[in-house]
Image 1 (cartoon, rainbow, N blue to C red):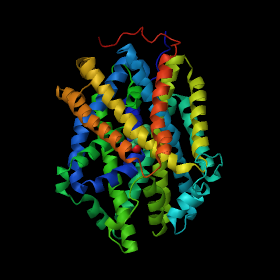
Image 2: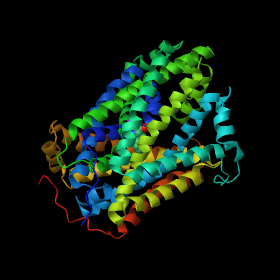
Image 3: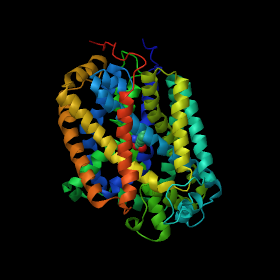
Image 4: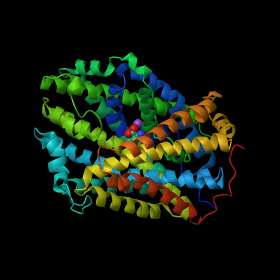
Length: 506
Ligand code: PHE
Ligand code: NA
């Protein structure tokens, strides 16, 4: 039979770890720009509705699956129906692929943390990031896009990220993951809190905040604004690709699930609002320094916000070194606690299926992921492939996983009542019948629409002007890799019997 399952030491350790997982790069560089572009202050309305009707309900669904069926996604889903195992491995593959490039961004943040102290990027921060730092210009047009020319400034921090990740995972759930979050989450809150307060006192901060929060109520009539809200909530809570299934499988049998879930969800959103305030105050300052309006600024989301626009803010600020260091420290820490959570999904799943010890699993999974990550992204191949893979894994892979999971569980297998009864049997906050409507109707309808329209758009319009052959390999190829990996892993033999299992409470 199975060895006794690892456990978080208690509710607090679980909550901190789950918040550490949810709060990531998306809170810092995605939310502020998305809110700004989709109605500003008015965006908060669809955002909150999306949180209540999709984010929290799928979070509860993940918790119920993981806690009742006690496994990583393949084992937990298989215990519902054997043939659901494949969906579990699809989620594991998503986690593995995301981890491989997510680590890279944390590595970049570490380099820029160090550069903050001597402001290495100078005045032309765009040229510094893609040129001197990533050396993208070394692979000029026409050359093969994959090279093995290592860039030391990327290689060294990336190696550090992988060593730290492997060390935390090797120490296990309670002594590794939980401890890391207990240390890093307070650091993140303090560093980011100082940053936000400081940015409020910058010249022009008010203009930035006005730009972000002035409501454009007309935006609420635009369906795309609502889609953007569901998409942000969904991405930000990291639901439906196995992380929360895995983490909740490490809770005691009698553990309150829903109340901590609400704490996690609202903390994550609180952190997004905080980031919106900090980022737009800083952008207001930059616009003020450049004598332009906030609306004329470019590069207000994603890697460009962090690694081009923020360095520009930092270099024009009095005592910018400290501000820069705090910003990149926050980015690295927020990313790191998310990275360990996605890799734990892969760890748990391999340990369970192939009967590996934790150290065997960390050796293989950490090793393979680190090698792929370093070979793929510490070279002059850099940014381009990362951005493409991210778009397909996130916008197609995860959304597909959520749609398929909710439809199968709620409609095909009719598992809604059992899962809701499970949540209510162990939790203080009781889940009403509204939950069926959310996970059974709202989520599949809105995410299903999103999925279809994105697939059609990518087929018809391509992506960011890249050529079709490249997108076939880097974009659609990512989906093929996810599916092929899932099929292969499902077909392999279990080394320990996963099916001798009785769910509790009955
Ligand atoms: N939800 C995280 C965020 O908002 C992103 C994330 C990605 C978390 C992958 C875990 C794993 O940034
Ligand atoms: Na988040």
